[in-house]
Image (cartoon, rainbow, N blue to C red):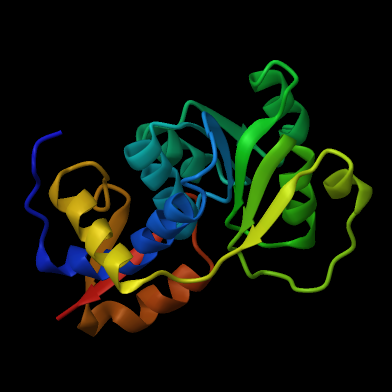
Length: 209
């Protein structure tokens, strides 16, 4: 892709993108060809793009919002699963010829999605938990132990990964503008409340003077 000239406000998105860069760096020693991202919110979409841009990974994305899944497709997802109607674990296994995906990123963070991250994972694969929706949960520990699945927890990013994120944006390897909206500070209060209960295509707002 050719270099892009983003508005200065786009620099505020380096932090969420750096979360995706951090996950790529955290798992860079592992062979990864397929990845499932659970949750097509800002962090999930940034993780999807970082995996695609930095590792050339084929990505699948799951969410309950058809609009967000359309955005994931536009950003390069190979497959999308609607968690309202699809059995995401079964669909992930079918996508990978019954093997399971190499990497699952749980960007939602509920007890349900954490268990889903393990169910969709191949033996020896890695689940990365970055979502924080719920804390306490129960899991089938044998599902981790016997197939030697790994679980990484992660939060935030390093300073150098923020720089990597800015370079990905500058080089045009990720898209941070087509699915976000920039709103003036004068209109920020109603927009803030709207983003707390977003509609089907409302994902991320940037407040700018």
